[in-house]
Image (cartoon, rainbow, N blue to C red):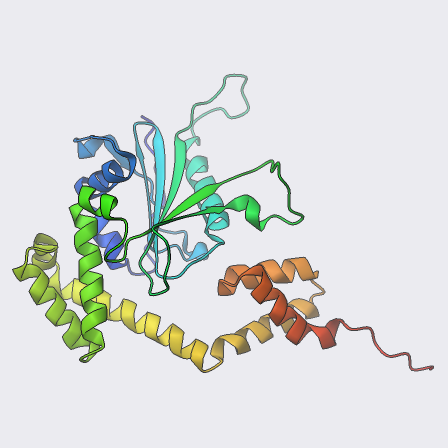
Length: 298
């Protein structure tokens, strides 16, 4: 197997999901659960995660190869229809690293690992167990025969969902239970106390026990950071902070005379908006800027 050497530049802190499944044994179990395979040797797994891909803010991404199959897993607490585009940018870098010692200009056909893209969703918005997002859904104009396609599958890993997957991967089930307990307890007590209670109970009940015993302080710090971050984002949205940022973005784009399609795509990517939401903001804040100037001679 080709050894992929990727630069390491750890600018940001890993999230709890990524810390748990960075362990090759746990990641292989998760892969087996999703694909119905029975691989047992963790050393078959080659990690290809790009730790310097901060420009896509995919801090929860895990990328790896097993038996010439390249998997890219991403945990999300929000529904983001633009993930196929981010996956495309991410995997292009991975393939570039994979073939760096190969002759891509030669007449011999290269062999590259077959990709798959999975999103593990554990947000508070109600979602089905399985959802598919297609890159072609972002294309304008739309087409029934896209020349380029990428399919990302979103799996709902909240407690009570995706039971077959949870039964096949107990670590993922335990992670889901841990998150659910924090949400429940944080409604009843301060966040730090809620996380401490969840950790103590999970250890006592053999839920992520070994991981939490070994990494208790770091797990608590990560959980506080993640939940504070989510709360802050909700607060900003409630107070109109995000709308102000959207207005500023639109005004800057118009100053540079960007076409409306480019502005819409930027709004959808940056603020995780649907096309209709982005159009609504553009109509609201871009109408006066794009309207024709009045005729002074009239």
